Amino acid sequence: MIDSTFGGLVAVVTGGSSGIGLGTARMMIAGGATVISLDVDPDVDPPVIGIRCDVSDAASVSAAISEVGERFGHIDIVVNNAGIGAAGAVDDNDEAEWVRVFDVNVVGMKRVTSAALPFLRNSDHAAVVNTGSIAGWAGLPQRALYSATKGAVHALTLAMAADYAREGIRVNAVAPGTADTPWVGRLLDQADDPIAEREALNARQPIGRLVSSNEVAAAICYLASPASASTTGTILGVDGGMLGLRTRPPQTAPLR
Ligand code: NAD
Image 1 (tube, rainbow, N blue to C red):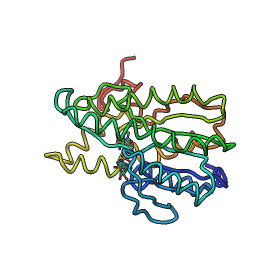
Image 2 (cartoon, rainbow, N blue to C red):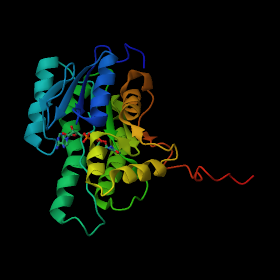
Image 3 (spheres, rainbow, N blue to C red):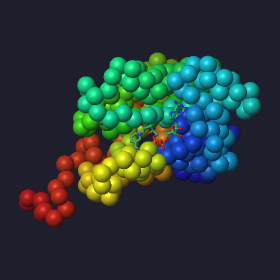
């Protein structure tokens, strides 16, 4: 990424205080952006600016976007990245949990984008990037609710891209594979054998390791940057080959 890629641009990154969001915020700042993390945990090291925001609360989103507008004058980039997980098959989570996870992972994107739209319409470099997931594409065990939200994120990304293309607002998404973030660290900590569980996750990846948060951040930065001005309605996999590749175990030779 060229250092001045984001020069003069203001970006809001939801969930920008940890993992993929924090990596994205830091990378955009390195490229010259002012970046505000809208997060339920706004405690983030400068130069990332933290503003408390719960994407599942319309009043909180509205207040946070207004504050960004007042303090920084414009918003050019929205990264809808805040998300929460849910484990289980379709009958394992009750309806209240379904509503709660959709409220954060999907309706949260609607709230933040809607609040930021007046600013995006005034930008010459308006871009929205949503964080989807391999789980929105591939059937993974014990992820029914989470996968449903990420499939919705992918569909929402395409619909939004169609709605705003003529207004010059680009909308794209990334679909990360299992990424080495504090989120996955927490999941591994809960496993009976965290080391074996990490090895199983590594083995599921054709590249043999988890995706790094900076690799996802780099993809988000590309899609958010003026360098990708003709790219809209794209869902960019950053999944170590997990969706499209069928590799063989390392010890076996392919048939010739
Ligand atoms: P993370 O837990 O490290 O960071 C998530 C951030 O979102 C946290 O700072 C958290 O405080 C914030 N957040 C949670 N709920 C919020 C809310 N209601 N309002 C505002 N902020 C809120 O997680 P991560 O792994 O960096 O995940 C970021 C995104 O990437 C999520 O959308 C997740 O679904 C997606 N994703 C992650 C992986 C992975 O393997 N880590 C894979 C695919 C997709």
